[in-house]
Image (cartoon, rainbow, N blue to C red; front, side, top):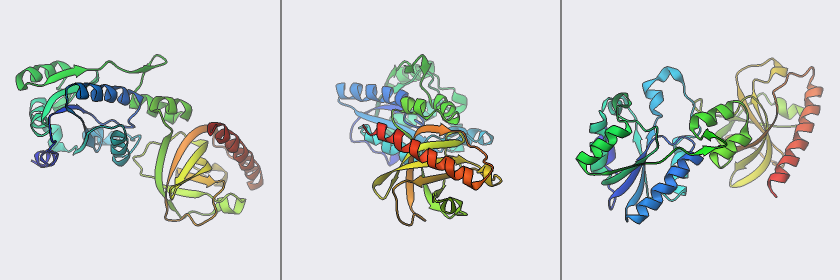
Length: 309
C-alpha cells in the first residue's frame, strides 16, 4: 500500500508522542495543543511528532464542497517545525487512506511512528466514516498499548478557536480578529503576473498576484498590508475584488507597494493582511478612483506606522 511506503520512510530515532490532523492555519488552538504535546513528550523523553494530511481530507471525501485552506502544506510544515516539533510528517490523503478503518490506520501509525502515545483535541475522529472516536481510540490504546490524552478546546472571548471560525472572520474581512485567532497576520503567497496596467495609468502600479484557487482570501475590499519580496518587506495596499469601476470581472488580488522601484513580474511575494480599510466600491470616474487611492495610501501609512511601534 502507498500509505505504508510513505509511513515507512519516517523512521523516528526513538518512540514518539503523536498528534494528528490537518492543522490548517496552525492557529492559536493548534498551538495550545502542540505546546502541551511538547511538554508531555519532554517529560517522558519522547519525540514530539505531528502527522498532517495533504490534500485536506474534505477535498477528497467531498470534492464538491470546495473548501478553501488557510495555508498550503508548505506553510503548514514550516509553521509546525518553527514551533519546535521534533518530527513533522505529511501523509497523502487518498481514497485508499479514506477506506481504512480506524483500527487499520492506528495500527500502521503505531508501527511506523513508534507511537508511545497520542494526544488529540475533543473533536477528534479518524478512519472510515470518522468511526475513530476518542472512545474507540482509548479502546485501541488498551489493546495496542499506547496512551491517549485529550486536550480541552482552546477558547478566546467565549469562542472555540477553529479553522472554521477563522474562515468566517476572514470572509467578513475581519483581519484583526483573524490575527488574534491565528497569533500572526494572515498571509497569501503568489507569483506576480501581467495585468492590464490600469494601476500604472492611475499612478499606482499594482502587482497582480496569481493565487492558488484553493487558497482562502479575505472578503472583497481594500486592506493595509505588509508585502515581503526578495527578503525585504514593504508597506503596501492590497485590493481584493472584481474592479467594478472598470466593468467588473473575475476576482483579483492586486498589491501596490508604496516604496518599491523595479520590475516585479515573475517574482514570488507574500502579502500579510493587517487591517481592512473599506469595501470595494464602484467610482464614477478614474479621477474619483485616483483620489480615493491617494486617501487609502495615506491611511495605510498611518496604520502600519502604528503597527511598527
